[in-house]
Length: 419
Image (tube, rainbow, N blue to C red; front, top):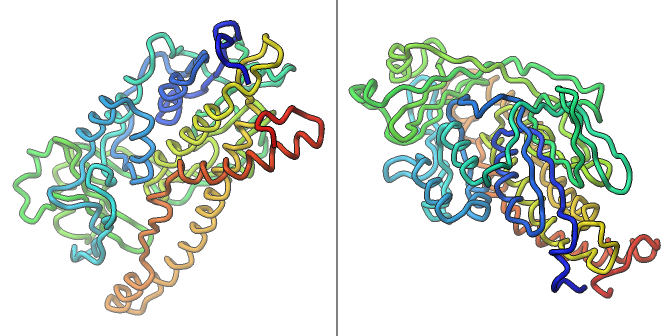
């Protein structure tokens, strides 16, 4: 490879990110740090919108952000994440009595890397602040994409315009238009559950006796109620009748409530298409609130794709000067091999959890219900603390041999590693 002096004479890698939510904003920020790229984030709204309530950032998500954000950005993340007063993790409580049945603190994770809760607005604003000026184009809803030859993808927008890119990143969420193009028979299923939430100033509830100062989750049959501070506010997911009196006191003080019906659709078997398109976040695997890890999974997708792109920089140094210095096809291969085994295992775990929930719900009395709940309750650290960088390194160490050797044998490319 000959990189010295070549980058300035080579066309930039054009990256088009569709959707400016948490996944898209994270991608725009970190991809802009790649060498010799032109990143554009297309967002359908006319301006940055303030929507959403509480969001959890699991340990795996904090790990990703510690590597993706600037030092100042990570310092701001520490400021906006709430982790409780002298308590790590979250406390899991009985739905009616408030008894703590289990804790969820990671025993080997320093506090600044522990999971925490924040407002979606605060987290999104932080991610947007990491994006270079001029990167975001508002009022642009991506509706479909097509391969037009020579590794180029053309994205078509609702306003009738189109843009070409070398890599399209679909980060347009559960109702992704790009996803629908590739999976036209996609069905959205209502989970039969609605998430209710509202944020109120902490001063309104400070007088409530016994109000936890840490994040708590009250568990009933198929229902969970969260209560947590978010900096100077408190967020509550509305409880049901006859739940812990503390929750009822909070509910009586809420001036309103926001309802979010939970819908899901099938997780993608393959998050890449046409050797130039990657799906990330809910566009690839909509969690519907499972494990509170939606944004953490999205950040891991983005980080895996960033590492994959960075690894391939310089692959085409000795080839056609009209092409970018990246091997997008190989980068997408690394991305897919890094994420899919983990995502498939999580999907399988969701099925296992449903079986456990049914077992707990059929208990004959409250004492037996508590016994069954404690028996089946699992923190699933392998999900919450997943280290996507370590997994990517494992995959790349193998694929640099197997993928390149196979392509060289097939006559598809020159093996740049000399294997």
